[in-house]
Image 1 (tube, rainbow, N blue to C red):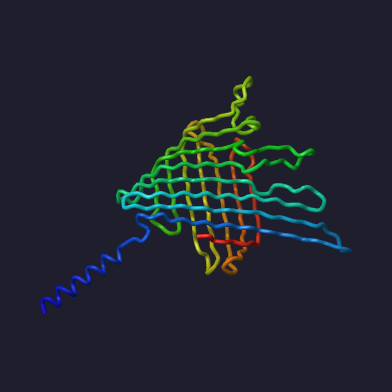
Image 2: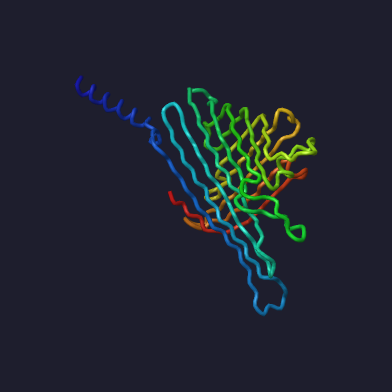
Length: 281
């Protein structure tokens, strides 16, 4: 009887410990989602008016994560590029951005974990202001470009919301368009192509399933330099995705940017799209 009790106790302990094993420990966990969206209207012998139109965009969201017993690593590369064409007008850029975010977390068993991060942001291709004739180029690849390093504390215990706050160093680069993005207006005889700021950065990610097959994802970034704490750079990326089936989605995206060095007015971009989404792994 005693041997039977010992055997049952041994099996029960093994079962409990087996339940606690984290399958993501000490292994790379990649993810890659590619998307293509298309909107098209065409007329032929149409008497009620209208113009042919075509809009398309391509996106990629690549992630890589690694988790050890006392630390973890996450990397996300996300970008989107798109154009639209109406009638006989030339094709115009509608989406043109990419960023890469790398974060290292140290897990000492605290509620808030120390972290170190690096964020790179840039346009992908040449971008233009179409409100003037002829059109005026206003951006190019890494013109402007932004690199931000930060260290601080993060909260990563929730499946819905993850946030972090830290001390940040931000470098801004520009070349042809330095006058609009990196130049110091107080130095009239020189145009600076590089700007360095120290300040505070906060990044909050939200992922919430509103109803079955309808997902909200949001990313809010705030940054302010110590010499202008009354003025904050704000970037808020919102997306609502309704899954029709395994490869077809309907999505609504709404991007808000407030950065006074670029414009005194708040910038917004919204898009309603039906497209093919494929998860490679």
